[in-house]
Length: 312
Image 1: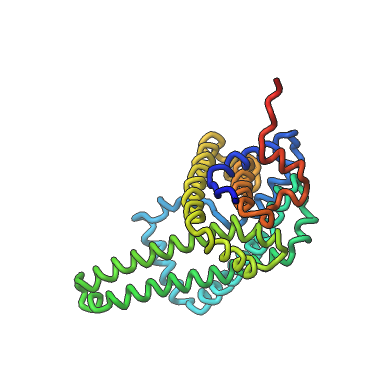
Image 2: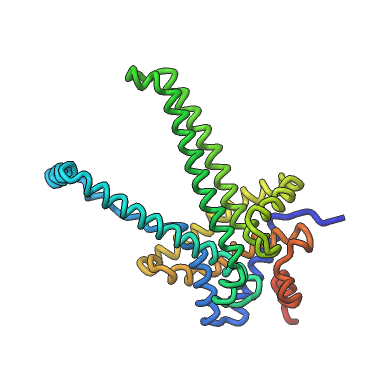
């Protein structure tokens, strides 16, 4: 009889793996290399929030009006420039997403093999990284399409009240339905993104398969253990909040240093390694066919799974 699946037990295993990987012994070169692959895997996942609080004020109304008049007088030029800038932004965004897709497998490979290589995993997971990138692009487009459909449906329901400029039953129905649909949309998208990062990437690396094949394998596992994965999702969200809170503490103490790309990832690297290890150790509970750490060394996983005994 197989042992029950736990969402708590992998926490201690992940902490032991973090200790083994980063602190036994401590190696600054390895830390920096592993941090670089972690940083690559996180590219495009967030951006600094700029403060435009003082941009709009009474004194700026005249320049804005002049700028608006100039825009109307040179509309063709403005549209051309906007199109060029849009194409450039799209190209850069896709390039960053592609590098990040390859970086996720580089970081995973280094964590499970307890090393800090860059070139070899970049080449080794070319197929998987490219497949992950294409799937992410399609997922992004599908997400935008669903969001647009929710807005369109809500607008059509509220249209009678909009045309009458009256806030009535149609408007209320549109708001309620829109909020419900958006809630379902947000929960579903969060679950898909979390499962994609936590399980699809390891399965793709383990089976050397593409994204759709990995999703098919995961769906079989999900259908057999739906309740466990729902509990995992809830616990993983709470775990993400805890990691975010710890990162925020570092931001408060280190201030501007945490805004420097790559440096911020290196500083909180144990958190990223822990989160990566947690999902792997959770997945390993479903059988030997889902084990990643043992592929490199049975000695390493025995140390990673159980803390070393205290000497007498």
